[in-house]
Length: 375
Image 1 (tube, rainbow, N blue to C red):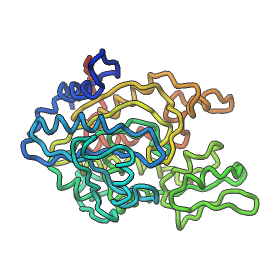
Image 2: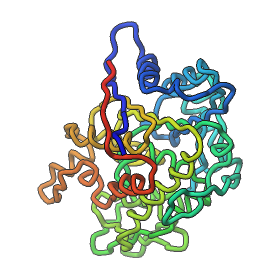
Image 3: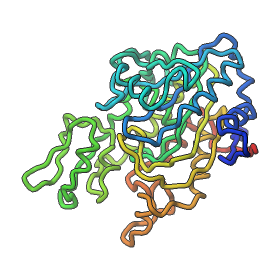
Image 4: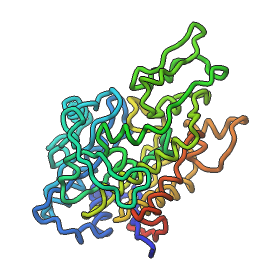
């Protein structure tokens, strides 16, 4: 397979030119106009941010993409699926309210918002996974399937289970219906090492399933029947007291994300955009966001989501960590084992390479890319 082209621009702009205009220039240079948009429904898959989290992408970036789609004759809509865990996006009514509070509406984005898996997260479609090994079919939001064209617009960040969240995470996990998310998460549940737990309460406050309680000694206990295996508590614990005993659980999660992405991208045009900014240590699904672990780097676009994620990873690995951050604290701790990998040093329990390796294996794209710089 020949190298895929990934287009990159930084966040520098001259006076009188907005970042939105620079994003438009980037995606045009990357060849978005080669897609036939005329009269087609275009799903712009993104994350509207959990209430309390401020690291999500501003609606201005969504409008820049939607404007280009409309200029090319397409009919864009912003979309995401409901969450598996309770929170501010667990059903379509609350999800739309959350999006509006966070600034997403038809005026700010230039298009409508549709929750892809419906009111209760049950409006899904079962579609095949070409070359799937762990999943032969995928349960995904119906509106994502009904769209003629898929555009992924994602905030590239750290993640407490998959190492980072990028294009594949945005499509694969984000595009799964509630049942689809459960399938992806069902290969392992975390446990608390009682001798390490300090009873600080942070894991319980991060749990979206009310699965964590405390014994008489104030040690955390995870109810395995209530736990959905999302891994949020692992990232929340500052003392590495929560682990997943199923050593290949995160590896399987990574592979399933790749397979769900394959299902949603296959058989129709897709285009992918990543913004490496506000690189928070954990997922945007949290109702808070810690300080960025890396400086803002830039915007990238490609027809190949695998190459795009690989390029983002490489740029992040070359960046200098921010000292006053979770990653900076870990690297400054003399007892921390240094992995010389920003994602492992940020959250030591993660797996991330498997997502890209498996996506390449099943034919979704290639990790071999050529970076094209756009000024």
